[in-house]
Amino acid sequence: MIVEKLTLEQFRNYEKISVDFKEGLNIILGQNGTGKTNLVEAIYYLSFARSFRTLNHRDLIKKDKEFASIEALVKIDDENKKIKMILTNDGQKITCNKVELSKLSELADLINVIVFEPKDVGIFQASPRLRRSFLNMQLSKLSNKYLEACTRCAKLTKERNAILKSAKPNVDHLEIVTNRLIEESYEVCLKRKEFITMLEPLINKTLSAISFIKRKITLKYDAYVEFNSKEEYLEKAQKAFKDCLENDLKYKVTTIGVHHEDFSTYLNGALISNFGSQGEKRLAAIALKIAPYFLVEDRAKRPIVVLDDVLSELDQTHQDKMINFLEKFSQVFITGTHINEKYKATIYDVANQNILRRNTHGR
Image (cartoon, rainbow, N blue to C red):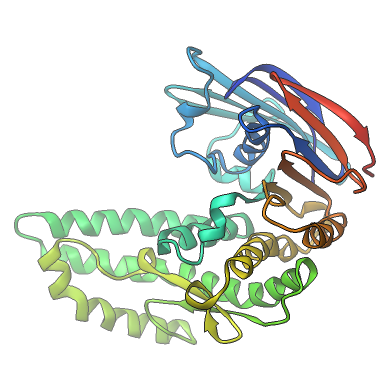
C-alpha cells in the first residue's frame, strides 16, 4: 500500500500543493510551524476521516476559507485508487475513483495508516480512553464486524443511559436494552482479547528491532468480565450487570461494559507506567504503535506508517536501529527538523508552503 501522490487545497497552512512520494522511507524535514506535520496529518485523515491532532475537522480548513480538500493516488498491488475528501463547515464528502462512499466504514478497505505522535509516549500513563481508542482504531481496520459491533454497542449504551436518566426508569425496557448490549458486546470483547494475544509477540519483536531493551513486554487485557467461551461470557456479563444495577440506577449511567475496558503493559512483570524509565516508555510506545503493521498478512495491504517527530529524543545509535528496521517497510513517513543523510530515504524539505525533494535514495 503506497501513497504515490498527495494534493492539498486550503488544508491547514497550505493554499494548494501537490507532492509525489516514493516507496520505502520518506523523510519530511522542516522547522516547527512550517507544515511538515500537516502533510502526514492529511495522509492519516485519508484512512480514518479524522485527525490525530484535533477532533474538529473545521480546524483543518485554512483560515477564512470555506472548504479544504485532500486528494491522494493510492497504489495497492497494481491497482490505483484516487481518494478525495472535501471538508466544509457542514461536514465532509469522500469519493473513491469519483464514486461517493455511503459510509465511513468503507474507508477501512481503501487505505490503512498507523501513526506515532509525540504524545503517544504517555499512552501507558494516560486515561484508559486513549488505550481503548488505540484498540478500536486498529481493530476497525482489521475487522468490519468489530467496527459494526462497536457502533451498535455505543448506540445501545447511549439508549441505556437515557433510560437510567429518566425520572422513573422503565425496568422492563432497561432489561431488554441491557440484554441486547450484552449480546452485541461479545464480539467487541472477543476481538479485543484476540488482538491483545496476537499483538504481544509483535511488540516484543518490534522492541527488539528498534532498541537494546532485553526485557519482555507482556500485555494484559483488562476485560470487564473474564471468559473462555460465549456461553461463559453471556452468563458472567448478565451477573455483572445485575450486580451493578443498583449503582447504575443511583448514578444514572452505565458503570460497566466495553466502554470502560482497558489493557495494561508490563516490562519483565512490572507495570511499565509505574516502573519503566522514560526511555523504556518511549521505545515501548513506539513499538506498540508500529506492531499492528505485522498483523496484516497480505504484504501489499500492510499499512502506511506515519511517525511524527519520532527521532528527536533518540540518540544516534537508536536512530540507526530505528531507520534500519523501517527501511524494510512498504512506505514510511517520518517528520523531523534534521536527519543524517546517510540513510536510504527520499528527503523532502518543507518551508514557506513549498516542498522540495532534495534527493532520492529510496526504492
